[in-house]
Image (cartoon, rainbow, N blue to C red; front, side):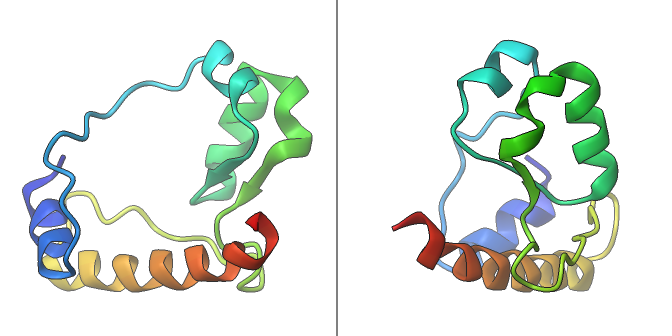
Length: 99
């Protein structure tokens, strides 16, 4: 995980030191009940890998007017803070639909 991302998460009380990035694969997508992506380009890529998962793939910002969330990789800490806020709000907006 990017060091800045890890620092921002820690500052917000989240500890994900054991997190490891993985490449998305068809089997992984087919096994998922719900797939949330940050950007439309991610959804397009997912559809190319496993077209059959289209109906369970959404923007994480769906309930925030289909807001896309930019990847802050290689950007400044304020960019990571901004993305953290967007992701937090988006996750909160999904909760009523997941209970």
